[in-house]
Length: 328
Image 1 (cartoon, rainbow, N blue to C red):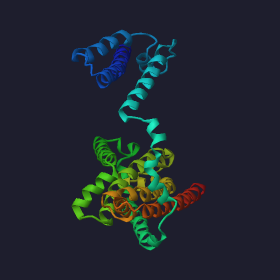
Image 2: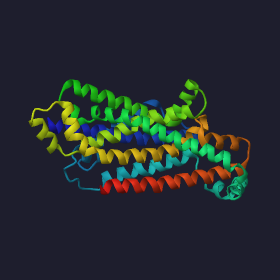
Image 3: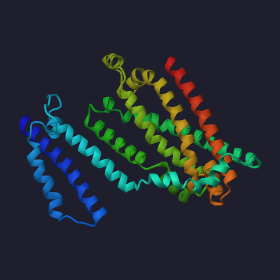
Image 4: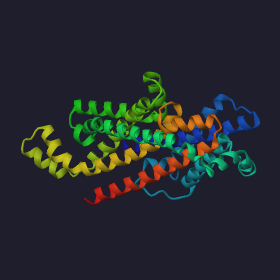
């Protein structure tokens, strides 16, 4: 039974591999030469190649299906190289990489560069106010996210919830919801909340808040999953309830990493708050967007230097705190 499953897995891997490679070739033929392969060949040829190579002893599919088995030969390595090379070529075409334009059209950014090295310090006070708005926006988003993430992380930890059917349902539900929320960028959440509560820092704070909850749940729950099970088993043996186990066996092991993750998230939120401001989320990002639209490049230069300064300070500060927490 295991042999048949391994062969099936090997075939599926090879089929998907050749479907990707042949699909890339067909796309490049159409994009570069306006040549279209028959639809049947686009799906049929990878199917045939999957059958041919899926049962070869030195194919990539065989290696994936039998990870503990030593695969001799070069063919599976050639398949990996084919994926890498084709991906690079397709990526180059899709992204429309233009090295010549990069080196020959630098003059188009002349005004921006001049503004960057000649900032308008007359706008320092209002820009500092917008910068403080950004810092506190990120701070409140982080603080408000921590209680929700802390509680939900226990229900999203596999080692705590996987022992019962109800626990598994809750585990998968929370994991799914937080993954969906985390996969939607804070920029998109900012657009939603700008429509919901209006343009301003509150919308930006809400966007970072909901994104931070999902991100911290992942970090927190993974930390719970890596705890030492010894204290948990000892307290369970005393007849303690689930909440008591979480309180006395789990929480003491995770507090220090939780603090480190929280500080790191605040650091990230300060950076993200700038981007969120571009769509109306308030703070220095909103000011940067306004000055850029008015082509006030000296003001843009001042804002960029202020952003760089606060990010540098936050990086040093958060790194220092995380180091202290690890030492303790």
